[in-house]
Image: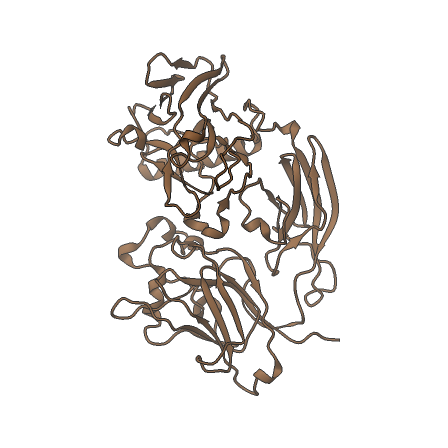
Length: 534
C-alpha cells in the first residue's frame, strides 16, 4: 500500500492538528489483514482555565474559552466552525460540513485506482477535562469489512489549532513518498503546532500589518524556546526530560583549499533514520532533528526522541554529504558528546574554474523578472525570494528564442549569464523542443536537481553518443512549484585527455526529455578539477 497525504482546507484560518496513525499488518494477497496493535491517538486542546465543553448535542462538540470557540462534527471529528474576534465563522460556511477543516489521505492498493479517505471518526469520548485542559477523542477502528473502502489505519485524531500535512508528492515528488507493505507497522506523531492569532489597535493598514508581523515573530521565538510543550498527555509524545541530546564539533579538511582544518559556519547537522550517506533527503517515515553549527563548527541537537539514528551533515561552500560511521542510540535524559568530526569533501585535484556556489540552491544564478500579468507582489519586494513567481520557465524562451544558452569561462558571470533552470524552449505552436542545450567552453563536476535526463558531450556533435548520462533522475516538482532547489544529486564526470584539444573546448549539457514545460533541472555548482597532484 502507498499512502499520499493531502490536506483539504477552506477559509481564512487554519487549525493545528496533531495526529498519530498506526499501520495495520497487511499482506496484499489472499491472506486476511490483521492488526498488530491498536494505538490510540487522541485529539487534544489546551486552553485557558474556564474552558467550556458542550458535548450534549448529538451531532456536534463545542469548545469555548471566551476568546475562541471551535465546533467539531460528532463523531466524525471534522472542524466545522471557528468563532473568533467577532467573526461568526472564519471558515467558509458556504461549503458543506465535510469541506471546511479536515484531513484526507489519498491512498491505493497495488494495481488499483487512487482513493480518498477523510479519516472520519465513528466514536467520540472525553478523555480528560479539568481547569487546565480538555482532551477529546474521535476514533475509528479498521476491520476486514472496510477492506478496499477505507485506508487500513486505526485512527484516533488530535487537534490543536493547526492542520499539518505529513507527507505529499506535491513539491518533493515520488522519491520522498512513503510506502507500507507486507505487514509493516508504522506510527508517527505530527505536532503539536502553534498558531498565533494576534490583534492590533486601529492604525493605517500598512503600519498595522507590520506591527502584527513583528509581534508574531517575537511570539515565534518564545514558542521555539518552549518546545517540546509540556502539556501534551500522550505516551507517544516524550517530554523534555524523556529526550536526549547530541553535541560535537564538525570540521572540514580540503587540502586543496587549506592545509589546515576548516571550521564551518552554518553547516547543517542532523539525526535521521540509519541509512546510506545522504539518505535523510528521502526518509519520511521516521523523525529527524536538525541544527546549524556556530562560527567554530560546534553544534548541539536537543530534545531528540529516544531511538537509533545516524548523524548526517552538509556544509555550504563544499560539495557532498557527511555521515558519521557509528549508529547513535538516544536514551531518555542522556547527553552524547561526539567530539570532533572531520568531513573530507570529494575532490581529486585543484579547481581550474567553477560555476556557482555549492550551497544546494540555484539562487545565485540569473533569475528573470516575471511576466507583469503573473507577478506576485510579495516576493517581488525581496530579491532573495525572486524565484517565487509563476511562469519563470517560459522566460527562458524569451531570452533565448532561437539558440540555447552559451556560457564562456573567463568571460561570463553566472549571476547574469546562467539561467537558474535548464528548461525546455517552446515554439510558436506552444510545443516544447527536444533540444535544450547549454554549451560551456570547458568543464566538469556536477550537482544536478529536478526531473530530467542529462547527457554530457565533450567536443562532439549532438547525435554522437554522450561521454556521460545520468539516466532518468529527479521526479520532483521544484520548478513547477516555484522552488529554487530539489533533491541533491552529486555526479562526477571523468574527462579523459584525448577528449580535449588545444584552444577552445565545448561541453554540451543536453536535456533530452521535453514532455512538458516543467521538465528541467537546476544546477547547484559545476567545477573542473585538474588531475591529482603527486
